Image (cartoon, rainbow, N blue to C red):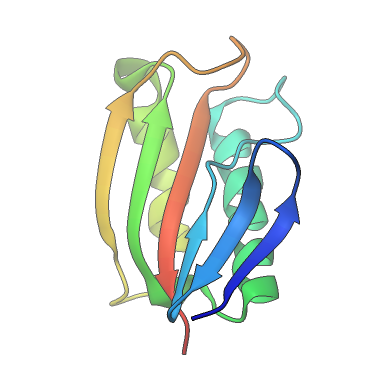
Length: 117
């Protein structure tokens, strides 16, 4: 079975497609000076673009892992954006954890797994 890797460098691929499933690397915002709501919007837009490039869309997300720098401070703000973005009736399995992210300015990182149509 073929494996398709998108936006690959020596360290990682931003998306890997295999056996009808799309695996996205953790996505972070471009503008790390923004608050958690804007960073979440940016991350979800990146996810949408990668899913589209791989041949699928947010309604087909199977699971999501959300990493927050500070769950107590940012959970509600991230969820407000997330809840508006997830298509009605298509909520994936999800975990949200607090994590020490690679740069202190990163407030949210999201990784998803989605099905192809």
